[in-house]
Image (cartoon, rainbow, N blue to C red; front, side):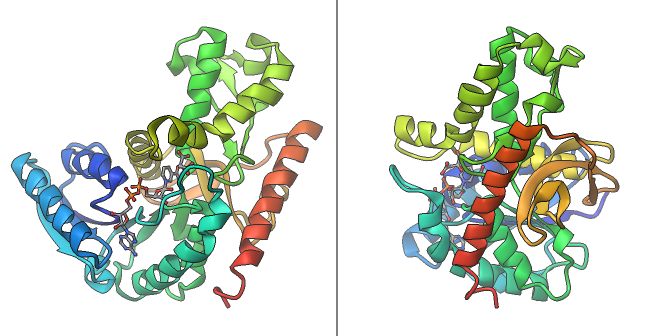
Length: 327
Ligand code: NAD
Ligand code: LMR
């Protein structure tokens, strides 16, 4: 039998956690023959820790053959110990009317601490995926604390945006979802993100030759994808959870699958005109399990360049906003 992968999950008793943990334990994230040990981390709040006990009981009650252990803790140095994957979900979520920047300071403190502890105690091959918002900048903050783990091990999730964009293109084209390929998200997980429709294909043809309504692609399409999170909050009174958990399963599974091509927010290193020190969504190709290379060379027209400039500006502003924290 394979050695279990240790998966640390913060915010394990939260909404996303409740949709996520059962998928990990069932094999959806790491495959049907890969055992896992779940290391569940919650805030040191009685109600959250009690809820976590209930989640752990339910995981037990599923009798998942691949689940080889559950750790429950509010101590991050216990929860991240020897973790191979650290899924940073726990954070204060955005409520109605709030922008992600409002969350930066509060959540920034959490990611400073977690970045430092992960670097100190996680496994030598540890990978980090950040979901808690504002995800790109929280990822940058966590990575800023790492001395041992290289920056490319820290990724943030823009996969929910890619999945949203794929569905919107399929609906507009009246095509099956699976025929929409190469729709990548550039920039921030926020309304400024850019779903680069000119690179997408539908049924093997350029999306722009199937959907010839350029005004729709540049306007309502980009806007619907960018503001989908707010639309869900307005409808549910709570932020997206099942779709976010599903996107994290996709994010990690594809990062563990050599050859997979998908959108991930990574340290830009100046690619596609982004500031070198922000974490920006980009297309990547997984090379070996857990490692990837950015796919470079996608041509950008003036519209795409202006969208990338806007989302880069926001990322640079977010970074400036927390500059005192990451010194
Ligand atoms: P939630 O409030 O239901 O759960 C968050 C959990 O995190 C809570 O149980 C809380 O106790 C816990 N927590 C808070 N601080 C913690 C800490 N320091 N350590 C460990 N746990 C801690 O929220 P949710 O709906 O599960 O959302 C979680 C985060 O994911 C939010 O920031 C939300 O905005 C974000 N989100 C991101 C995306 C994305 O695409 N990147 C999508 C949806 C939601
Ligand atoms: C989402 O995109 O659904 C989440 O990031 C929640 C939010 O605050 O928009």
